[in-house]
Image (cartoon, rainbow, N blue to C red):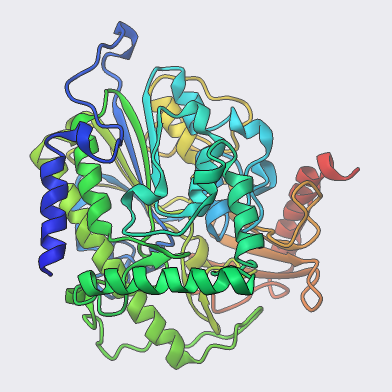
Length: 511
């Protein structure tokens, strides 16, 4: 505990002399701006990885997991039916950052990157036109790999390790200009696709390295995090450090800024801070759901334990957001800043499945939060019509008086425009990690949401080829009653539309 307090005190003190801290891009004072920039709002995008809207109090979840998000939402717009473009990091994040679905940006795989043309067609390139200061950071190396593709349109791309306690990555040190291929090569060659080098010789030294570093940080932070130090892919971190760093950034960045900060919690492993351990050990057992497709075989007991630990980790992330929100209130940042809270995908604890790396696209893995506070907003608004992550870029462009490029696949969000989105619009989510990057979608799962209905198509799988399910989310939000075949005319109508859409997006890749 003592070391933890010292470290945080150090970070807070160092924010007062920002140019000293790890060579990170801090700024003091207000830079000169052209007259065309005057009056433009700052934009702060906070992505909490693997945060399912199905687990937030704002969306009716029975556990009080997000009281601080609820405080923030009192003066913000809450989009209750908001959907990710995919169900894992690479595809979901790419849809946020390009305003297109996975079938267009082609970051289809776990370690996927976007199609080359999107290196100049993305959130950061679009806001370079208004001379925004553009900065990005992520705890997640898969996101960092994507951000490297957009690097020439960023003023500052902060390395993942800068806000980590320890990491053993070498790709960005050896090949700083080719991070994505180097990261993928390191993963395959040195790690064998797993978490340590495949070579017996390298594996010995790697395990020895990990042993000493893990022991060191466990001694420092083990009491604070009894389930283990927050980590992913051998990157160990504490969310407090990232929040402290963001506080300093918000005080010193040039205006106007576009800041994209992608934080890992509540992504697994669910290693919450001490005061949140067992706070939801309440005996609640959610109703069991039928195992339709792709069950991983987890028992209800294991699923409920994982759900509870996820909820407790989410409460930790929410508490740290609460610190950030209090700072924004105290410093009046909200008066001239658009603050966006969302996620790249959700998490699932049902039907024998735990997590999000699954061929399924049930609501828990694609229904994500979207809460937006416009500059100076002092009222609460609720939007229940279906929206998509591909709507975020069009909305921000519209808000800052910029034209919308034709290649965007979304529209301006409700309440941000006098012209409402079509109530009958169709939105999609795509899972195609087994598909060739530049081939037609031949194996995957595509969900179509229209009105209150959700149609999902499974194709190319040995046991579930050309399968469909249909749910009425208005009357059956838990997706318990499959209507496909029961409502024949509706099923045929929606199926025809979805098949036509898949055929359309496949057309450029058929040859």
